Length: 283
Image (cartoon, rainbow, N blue to C red; front, side, top):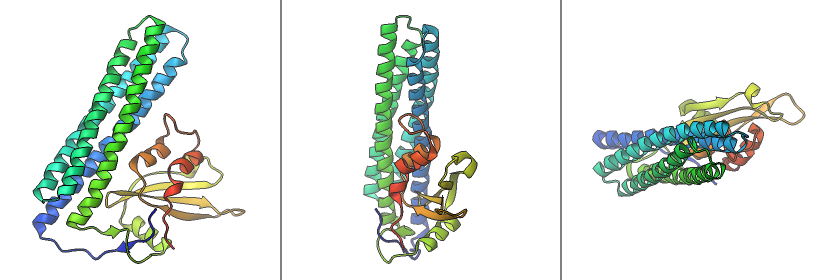
């Protein structure tokens, strides 16, 4: 949990070094985006596998298996793109002698490769299931595919942890705008800063939330970290108050916004499960 925030003065680096550091950040951001897509598609594939077990006819089971195969194939492609972006980040970090960043990016690349391999195995099992007539073999193929898919999710999350570590190391190596040490700041001031300077990644409005306590939840990207601003109803009132949540893992935001396998049904429940613990410890 973050205890303090400090707005650092911009550090003047030679333009060439600054430009190269920006390239590293750009590659990492691209890898994050591909990770999110791969994770979501893998979750959707698992959903179709679970749906297959609910069907009563072989043809319907095969249909769900085929749908899951398509999602796993797309997820594998996205994991491959993330692997490539991590490799590019590793190369760019090497150019500016940020050794730790280079190592973290290389580890992320390895995890993306392992996720891609697990997804390929899941895809193969589902391909067999989509043509299998024997119920016992069908169940085996589906169970194997789900196991591979869950392994892929684990590897994807490990990869994104390495990317987060790379970002923090890059800030130490080439400078940054927000650090976690230093003087405290009011929550209102920090929230205003994120709203003004962050990139709005997405939001869920009141109608979609359909919640008796949440009115809006929005995510912002700043310095390759995700911050969530949530409007929460004031008890016994028609008004809402905004709260800010810090350093949200990409997977947590995706789980809240999109749901999927293993996630609870309502947005309120998913907010508690994925966002609430990251409340900023500001004043």
